[in-house]
Structure formats: structure tokens, C-alpha cells
Image 1: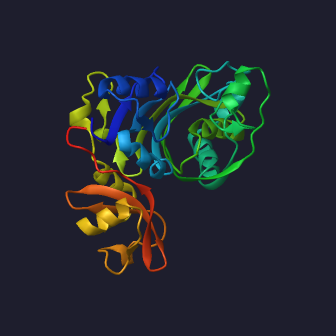
Image 2 (image 1 turned 90 degrees about the vertical axis):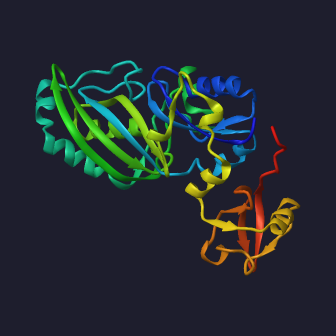
Length: 303
């Protein structure tokens, strides 16, 4: 099996690890990793790397993301989503006071660069152990606030039921933002409590859900995106010659001046793509040279 990137539309009720396990069976290799998980309740885009393309995932994890979600106002839960135990409900008066304008105002307070306390049941590590593991073991976990960016927080629809208000929203945010925490914090501002009842990830950087294939009937060979195509979506690109590709493969530096596109690439990680549209390496500028940060071996035919 060649190396590449897979875009999977994760169904509800399946863990991200379940998806990885199934893809390992379908691809016939254990060398499959992911560029960020989704909760079992959530659906949507997962990016997986196969074989050498797992080395590219590090550069995809930090991309911004888009979600569509439903926030239920009326009570908090122990996990900030529908899978947790419900906490005491808000009064009818509080809920009635949460009109559309009030919901929008609360959302606006959590838009932009914000300090967000992650959900206690999260993958954030506390003294080397995931927060959700500590919660499951009965520990009370208090997480520190982190700076994240919510670049868009749109109210799409509001539905009022018996003892609750559902708000459908669209969120664009930086990596590391918890949409569950947004639901919790909007509910806290309104005095109603709040939690997520639905979450769908529709974009990671330039990778979109309409490019992803459903888990059932997933065909690995036809769904595989080349490492070079994936790298182009996430990183600036330089073109290298056969000789430069050989040098980079041996860990040697190459001159910026002799590399097409390098002078415009700026600082940070750059994808070096060689003849045959092969991702040769991820490089960074070091003065007048490009230095290999992550190499991608030449694959044998039929590998």
C-alpha cells in the first residue's frame, strides 16, 4: 500500500480509534494515524495518514476548523454534551428570557481571541494523564484556560421546546478550541446552562467534508490523496530538481537561490516537491539554505 492521505466522514457513535482500526484492516498496514480526533457523538471530517504520510500529519493538526453544532439551552451536563449526566435545569423564567437577541449577544462574547477553559472530559493532559481518564477515575479536574480563536460564531436557527431552547450554530475556530465548552459558556452567560446535542466537523484547513467518503464501503485506493497534494493545501511549496531531491533525501541542505519558489515561501515549514509530483521533504529556511525537517522516503513500486 502506497503512502497518502485519507478523508473519512466519521459516523455518529463510532470512536476515532475505531475508524483508524478499520482503515488499518482495509489498507493492510498498521501505519495509519490521524490529524485530530472527534468525540463518539460527533460526525464529520477525519484526516488519516497512511504509511510515510503519517509524517505529514504533524503539519495538519494545527489547521483551523469549521463545525456545525446544536447547542441545547436549559441545563448543563457533566461532559458539556448529551452523553453526560444532566445537572439541575434552569427555571422557566430564565429560559423564556433567553431570546434570540440574548443568545446572539452571548455568542458574541465568545467570538474572537478568547480565554477558554476546556471541558473536563477532554483529551487535555493533566500531569501526564488525559483529563477524561482522571474524571472517569473519580477525580475532580480543574483545567487552566487557554487562548483560542473563534473567528466565526453564527446563529443559524433557534427552536423552542418544552423546557429547552435549541440553537443551531456554525463555528470557525483555531485548533484546540472545544465547541462543547462554547455551548457551556454561552449557557452560563444566559443563566440557562447549555450543552451540545450535535456536532459535525465540515472543514480542516483546506480539506472539506464533501471530499470525504463514508466509512461504510470506504475504498482506500480510490480515496487516497497523494502526500504532495495534501501538502500543497497546508504549506507553501518549493519545486526541486532530481539532484536537489537526492541531496534532500541524504539530509543535505540546498541553496534557496537555486530553488523555485523558495524566496517567496517565507519562514516556517515548506513542502519541497520534486519531479513526478513527489513530496520529497518538509524543509525550513536556514539563512541561504533549505534544511530538511521531515523527510519522505522514495517508495518502491507496488509498496
